[in-house]
Each structure stands twice: as structure tokens, then as C-alpha cells.
Length: 359
Picture 1 (tube, rainbow, N blue to C red):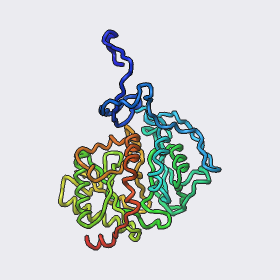
Picture 2: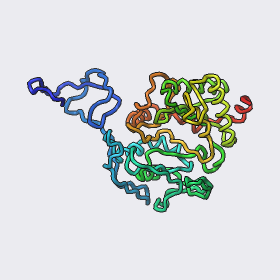
Picture 3: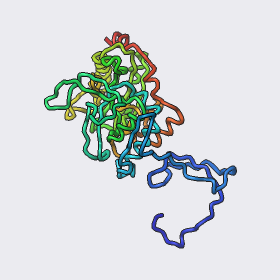
Picture 4: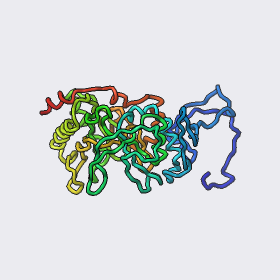
């Protein structure tokens, strides 16, 4: 209660039941964006209870496999009151829609043992203590050594719920995978347009550039799928047949990006140097072998714990607020609409045909 005089408080006996729509429970027990829907005469006041998600169990078993979870109460977003257990519970609940996007893709662990604002480190090679029921894929990859070296690496594969939760238990906040799968590791499943606003522009300009990219792709007869990056940008994915190389996907993205940047100077750019960059960067260089992307439905290590959220194109407008897509909001969207990124897995389009048109 706020600080008010005792005489200004009137206590009442709960008798009426109201229906209220709201976005989510806040972590201090309040309703976010509540909207009164009317009174209910089919329910008694003493029947109403708070609806909360089931807690995560410290031990999970699937057949002979056992996963022990640790430090469930550890603050991962102390400002929001979000714990490691809350993060694990989200990934448990979102597993049915995120796992198809992770399955059979080499996985890079990005670990935040002390939460989103603490130190982090990358780990491409499967840790020696990783359970043997998490499968791996061996591939030649560039290490993060200085100078970089190439060597064989055993990449983990996050193919089921227990593997997913093991990664989260190891401090992985977002799920970073290759664009290709292990049966054709040199053939990407999509072309990525990664939009990153510079300091001189904002999210409104990023939306404008995303819509220009959609217009260009539409003119080529290509279906595309947008999602929030979970930060300040937008990702646009163009699913393609697994026949082209990473070089083909990068060339395609470069041609489209250069065309938009040249026709909209100051709004869009392909300039990599941050000192020289003006406008929204359309980053085609993210299309490359061994590059990773934070998967759809990944929580991002940012203030407020935003989620990289699949969108409908009609949601990409001046009302779009990426920070509004919290874990609770995303789970509600999944319950209501299913996986809005399912088309990324099922749509196959000819990259060769599109490149021929552009060339």
C-alpha cells in the first residue's frame, strides 16, 4: 500500500467477481495493463484464486535420464525479481515451439553464470561434464583464440527438452545455433537480414527499413518472416531450399541491402564501421558458415528479459515495442496463436532463381 492516512482506507467484504484482461502478473504481484471486462455472476468470490505457472522441479527425469537443476532462486534479473528458476520454467513451457527451431543445429553455449548483467563467455566445444545423452556434431570451426585457429569441435545438439534445460542450467540465457543443420552443414535454411540501428536513429527507422526489405522480397515473390531481435533490432528471415551455399545467401542479402542503402541514404546503410555508420545497418555479413543467431523464442540478456519474438508483418508498425514481449507475454501468444515462425521450417523457396533475377 502507498503511504496514506489510515482514515482514508475503506475495507470491504469481497462479494462481486469481475473479469479483468491483463498482459501479465508483475513480479511484485500487480497486474500489468489491466482492462475491466465486466462482472461475473457464475462464480463466487471465494472460488477465485491466483493463477500461477507450475514451479520447476529441481530434478527432472525422462526414462533413464536424470537432470538435476541448481540455484533455482539465484537472481538472473535482480531488478525485475526474475530468478534462474523463472528462466528454466519459461524454457520448459516454451519447449514445444522452440525445439523444432533448435533441432539438429550446431549449438554455441553463451553462458551467463551470474545473470544477464554479469560476465559471460562463449563455449563452442561440448563441456566434458555434459551428459552423454546430449548428442554432439563434430565439425571444423574457427576458435575464439587470438589469433583465431581452426580445429575440430564437438558442437552440442539441443534436440529435446532435457538438453534445452541443461543448457539453461549452465547459464545459457539465449539459444544460439547455426543457420544450417547437421545433414547439410554447408547449406543454410534461410537468408538473414539483421537490422541494427546506429546511434543517430531509433527503432522507428528500424521498422521503416524492415518494411522496405519486405517490399523488395515481395517483388521477388519471396515470403519472409520477421521477429524482434530481443534488443534494439529486427531479424527478417527468408527460408530457402537447402541447395545454395552460405556464399549465395550472403550475396543475395548484400545485393538487396546495397540497393536499399543506395536508394535511402541516411536511413539505411551497409557501412560496417560504427564510426562511419549512419542509419540502420542491414548486416548481410551475418550470413556465413559457423555464424549463429539467437533463435526465435530466446530470452535475451538485456534489461527486462525481453524475448526474441516472432511477429506477423502487420505487427511491424509504429506501435511495435520490443520490450513488451516478456516471457509471460510470449507464452500467452504461443497459447493463442501457436508458432508464428513455423513457416521458417516448412517454406522452401529457390534462392538460385531469386539471385538470377537480381543479377
